[in-house]
Length: 179
Image 1 (cartoon, rainbow, N blue to C red):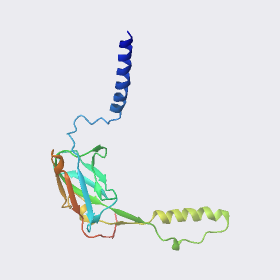
Image 2: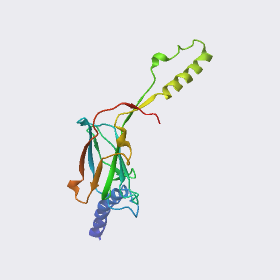
Image 3: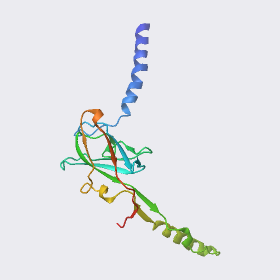
Image 4: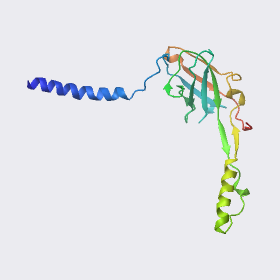
């Protein structure tokens, strides 16, 4: 009887943590194909391209499995299908790269703050409006921003070692985004 109780206690001690570990995994959609790890190094003029948004659009237009990721401090991105499932399904993808910078208007142009309390709130609102109307500059050649114009492509296979890619997006640019 004592051995039976000890056996059950050991079973519970071992199985309960296993149950909790399994509960933390995210359930994949039933129709999602197997995803494979992908690593892409993005550089610009040979230097890591940091904080760039990189998207992967399938060449097979019937495929709904696009992916996105953001480059780290080394210019490396590991894409997430539908933004939440790590890796990509096998196939060919167009790679799009976007990096922008928002520049707020100079504080030199701010009007002087009024001394009367009623005018201070209007002044604060004007300052907020001026800050919100800053300019956005694209820092990567615009051709890389769309699947129809980018020349960057990857082909993901089921062989892990072959899913590493490196791209250089060329000369650094600073183009006012006028969308």
